[in-house]
Length: 77
View 1 (cartoon, helix red, strand yellow):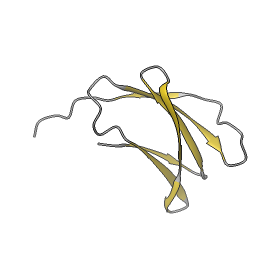
View 2 (cartoon, one colour; view 1 turned 135 degrees about the vertical axis):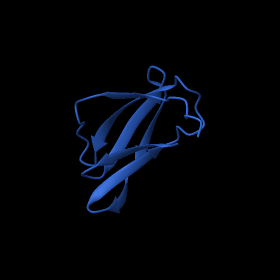
View 3 (cartoon, one colour; view 1 turned 90 degrees about the vertical axis):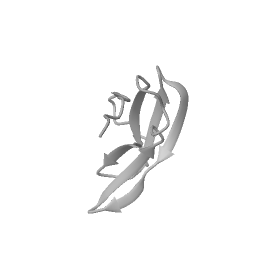
């Protein structure tokens, strides 16, 4: 599954994998109800891959906090 970051304002999700490697900026897009989203391409990453990310708003300011999410194995159904 992709990793979806929802934000209350438009901006860029600044992210990297496994310790801020392969750093990229992904612009958000409107997704309804005044929210904005960025879809990080986590669907093909193996379990244990860690995404670190923060947000840069359109005016160039940063959110000021970093977040991390680790990809888990998809449970069998």
